[in-house]
View 1 (cartoon, rainbow, N blue to C red):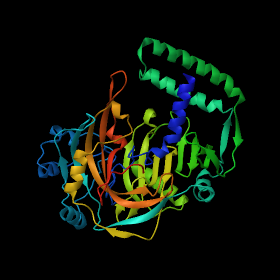
View 2 (view 1 turned 45 degrees about the vertical axis):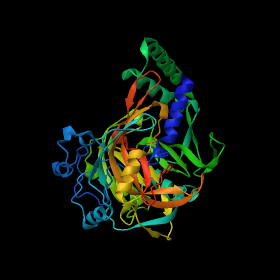
View 3 (view 1 turned 180 degrees about the vertical axis):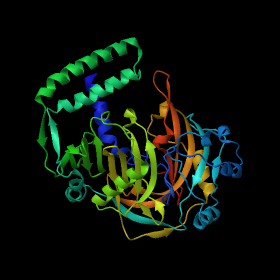
Length: 451
C-alpha cells in the first residue's frame, strides 16, 4: 500500500501544474471565468449564473429548468461580465453564433449519452490570426528572472532522507481517506488504520535524521520514465513567505506549492488585499502589464484536487483581445502570502496570417456528431454534459514532441462527465475544475488534441 500511495502522490505532485492549464489533451484546463476585460468589481461571491434576460432570449425557462444553467458553482462561468461590445455583437452576426446552444440528448457510437446545453462565449475581437508560437522554456535564465526574486534568502534545498517527504504526504492522505471514508469496506478501513499507525511511528523515527541539503539554482537533465525522454528540470523546497514551498520547474512550466498541503491553510484577508499581493509578485517577476486578469474567485480547500484555501487569480496572455488557453500565471493568495503559483507561457511569432472562421452552424454539427474524448477510459464513460463553449486561441504543435507550433482560433467545450468504475460506482467530475471536453479548429473544423 505504501508503494501505491507513493506513486499516486508522485503523480499528483508532478502533474498539478501541467494539468492546465497545463493539461494533457483537452484535459483539465484552468480557463475558468475568462473575461477579456478585467471585471469592474471583483466579487467574493461564487460564480454567477446566466441572467434571466439571457434565458428568455434563448427560449429557456428558469435556471432550475435547465441543466446547463442551474444556479450552482461553475468554474467556467464569468463573473460580472458587462453587456457585449459592438465587436462581440458583430462577431456573432458574421458567423451566426448564438448566445446558447441546446440539443436533445445524443447517443454516440460508443454508447455515451451527450447533452449540449451551453452558453456560447465570444471574445471582444473582430479578426483572427494563425501565428507561429513555441512553448516557453523554463531554464537557467528563467531561474534568474523569476525564481530568485521570489525565493529571496530562502534558497532551494532537498530533504534528506528523501523518504521523509513521502512519509509526510502518505500520512496526510491516509488521514483524509479515513476521515472522508474513502475506502472499500471494513477490511480496507482496518488496513488504512494500521498503515496510519505505521506511518506515524516511521515518521517519529525518521524525524531524528532529517536535514536540509542545499540544491544549486540550476537546471539539470531529468529522465522521464515514459519513453526515456529527457528535459531540463529543477525541483526542491524553499522557505518562502513563512512556509515551506515545493518548487518544480521544467520545459513545461513552473509551480510553487506549500508543503505539507494540509498545514497553514487559512484565508481571512480581503480580495482587494490579495489582488494587491498578486500584483506585487507579478512585478517582482518582471511580468506586470503582460497579462490580463482572466478570473478572480474565492477558492476552497480540496486536498484531492490539490486546491488551497484562498483567492485565486489567473492572469492570461491574449492575442488581439482573444485569450490564449493553457497560458499565464495563477496565484492563490491567503493569510501568509502565496499559497500557490503556477506559470506556463508561449513565445509568439510576428508572422500572423489572417484567417476566416467557419460558420457556427458547422461547428455545432461537429459537436453533435463527433465522439467526445476526455481523460477517462472510453469503456468507463457513460455521459457527457457540455455546459459552455468558448472561442479562444489554442496552441497546436507542428509535430509530436516538438516545442514548435501555431496558435489558431478554436472552439473549446467545457462541462462535466460521468464514468462508471469497475465496481459499478458512478463518479461525476466537478465542472468547477474546468473540464475541457472537446476542442474544434474554428478555421477548418478538425478535432484538436493535445495542448
